[in-house]
Amino acid sequence: MAVPTYDRSSVQVGIVHLGVGAFHRSHQAMYVDRLLQAGGAREWGIAGVGLMPNDVRMRDALDAQDGLYTLVVKHPDGRLEPRVIGSLLRYLFAADDPEAVLEPMAAPTTRIVSLTVTEGGYNIHPQTGEFDLRNPAVQADLADGAVPTTSFAFVVEAARRRRERGIEPFTVMSCDNIPGNGDVARRMFTAFAEAKDPALAEHLRTDVAWPNSMVDRITPVTSDHDREPAQRALRRRGRLAGRLRAVHPVGAGRRAFPLGRPRFEDVGAQAWCPTSSRTSS
Image (tube, rainbow, N blue to C red):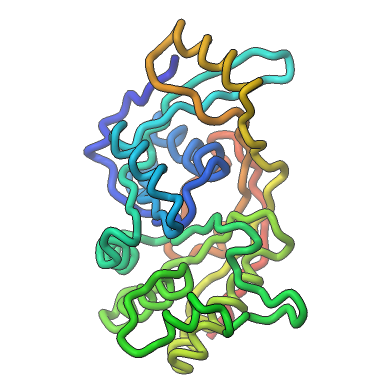
């Protein structure tokens, strides 16, 4: 079974990812791991963030394994290919310590904040298609002095801190499988900011890049039918339990990433030229 051969202690966090589910672990984290294995991307390690109460399970599982997990790729011929992924350097459960999430997001070394929060995570009103300000969690985060709990509050507050400290804004990279995901993210996050601080909302509109990405296939939920043969293969080749079974690329054009990005196309992802919702000044 393939395991990380690079020194994980030499890798710095360059990506903070919100929503470390199966999909993120089976594509974005895997591609960064490939780049690290190839001897590059030392500035693109990942700090994962859990925002939902049920993310406690992910925190406990990853903490117990120093952020390592096993990805099992199931090939069309039935062959199983397990490998240990090491690109997830740390996992932060936001409710434990919100500041421990905000400060890495605001750090100059973080150049991308990526999202896999599912379509429901964008808080779109089902009738109007606009940002739903009536959401109780959103209302709580908009209160004066509120400690962030939602993705909107974390991203907006981290962007505020960077602007206040004179640090270039990060790129917000949506990896959710919805049409125009960057455009959707831009509309929803700036709508939250507008309700909190209109000047900050304008900064998000004009200075932050929101590239659209395309995911060609989603990661299916691992069933017991998949898990049992995967675990047999892992017992033959290693000790870590298999969790995932498919990997698929996210493409992204470099012009949409003013602070740079990992070269995913060097390790198998299909590069393309997405639009960016950043307005040139």
